Length: 286
Image (tube, rainbow, N blue to C red; front, side, top):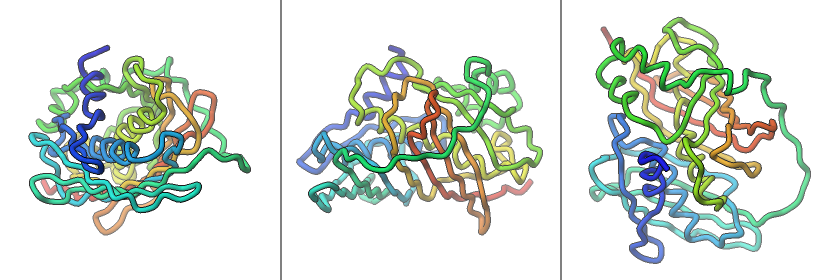
């Protein structure tokens, strides 16, 4: 197992301080503040550890309140809102330096049969025929601003392969398709861990889709992006170390906010999860 993958698994292995209180480490991945996916994954793990194992998360809704400090741990306080016959609800507050930086509400359900349908998966180029996204960007590191160069220089625990060409700063439809998978075998078959890892990686590339119609290349440093909220729905089982397709679309941006939706399919074309995110999108002058 690679060092970077082992470190990610350690991040999700929270320390239990009390029955409903957990502490997680933070990491600098090259972003200006704690990566939103880290807080999302850790908060979901904290909630999951207070729920019966047979109940799986089916939806979550979260708000990013303040920038996180990657030089300090984060405390997660879980409120056991409801334990019903079929559904369990949890609310998690992430605290750092005495302040709330993040809220999450999650709903868990016992397995249950019912009607089953889904939209068809997009017909796109398979991942084996596409270049590694990180390697492609690193070939032009010298053209990136310092902050973006710092982000792309660091190794990632996930592989990404983009169906569309890398953003070149020209306006184009706010649609993108990216294959991704864990960069190595997940050592644990626990579905809870796979869902927390999917929550972590779901924050990559989602909001960037809203910059495409405006030709605001995120790589140039011309636009400031920051997640404001994040919603996620888990539909079907999956493995995080198999290729998954992230089908992204941005239907709107206004009021210095961008909106993006994502659908996540496995190689068999099954829709395994959906995401939605709105974020701050401010254009830098000059």
